[in-house]
Structure formats: structure tokens, C-alpha cells
Length: 213
Image (tube, rainbow, N blue to C red; front, side, top):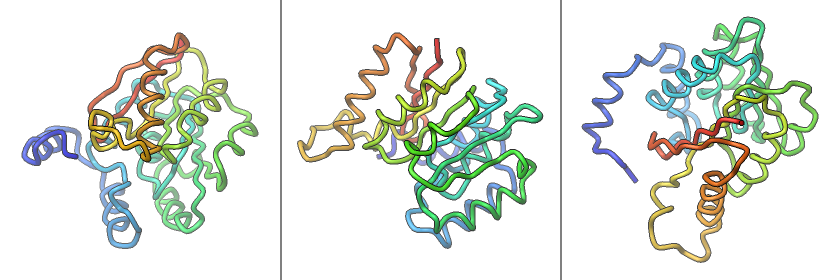
């Protein structure tokens, strides 16, 4: 579902910060070589992630769902000097393209990639985090959130992508549609969760921003 007309989307991109050349190259290669390229964060949402990261100015970032590395590179733009970004993905076939662009970036020494299930990896991380981005298996979103929360510093920010799920959250519900059921429940829970302050932004497919109280 397009929440805005293509003309408005084009206007918004044109009047936002330009897409860095490295990220434009990563986007092109993703669309040429990788299955389901629509999963890439892309120019506009990438600039939103970059801006939020710069506002938080995190020492440590956690990302669940690397895909080809576009969002990680956007988030890394706000890192403090000496900071780190840990990104987790289950797909070994994407590792080559991730590492190619991580190594070309200014953040090569700050990004650590983990291959495996996020719920297995997170408990073993020694850092606490100022910023987290959840963008992986929607069925696992509630468990991801609960795994991430104890690792967050007070005042930190947790971001969750695709929370509007192509508009399905406001459409007649198919009883067999498990991801939509889960997102509906999670969206309601986060709005009422006393541990966080929550707002849903209509950015692309919906971006929830939670600040840790």
C-alpha cells in the first residue's frame, strides 16, 4: 500500500537530504542481485534513520535484521567516536554484499556482523545500547522487543519497522494472517507499555519510535 501518492513521495525525497553515493550504489546492487529488493530501507527512510541516530548520538547500536546493510550504514552515521554497531541476520547468502559495503564505508571498524538467530545472539552481547532497530521476522517482534529492552540504556530509543504492514492493520482481518495479528497486538501493547514512550510515524511502511523511560 502507498500511503502517499508517487508524486508526493518523489517530492519528499527530493527535498530531504540527498542519498549518499555509497548507499545509492548499495541500493542499485541490491535491486540487481538480491531477492525481494523492496525490503531495502531506501533513500527516504534511510535519511530518517540517520537523523534519528544523529539526534541520539549513540555509543552502541543494535540492529536486528541486516538484509544487505543499508539501514546499518544509515544508523552508523550517528555513532559516537569509538562507538559500535552490532547487526544480526540469519541469511549467510547476504554476508558478502553486507561486508563489501561495510568495508567501503567510514564505519568499517565500528560494525560487527552476527550470523544467527537474534534471540540466541542478544543475550551474549556485553554492551548496553542507546539505539536499537528491529526489522526482521514480524512473528518474532514481541520476543525481539523483550530481548532488546533489558539491553537498553535509560533514555535510549527502540525503533520497529513495518508496523503498518502495508495498511493491513486497518483492513478487515484474515484470521489466518498471523503477522498482522501479532503486529496489531504489539502496536496496542507498546502504546500502553509504561516502560516506554511510544509514537508511530507514517514513514514508508510505518516506523514505531519508543524511548526508554
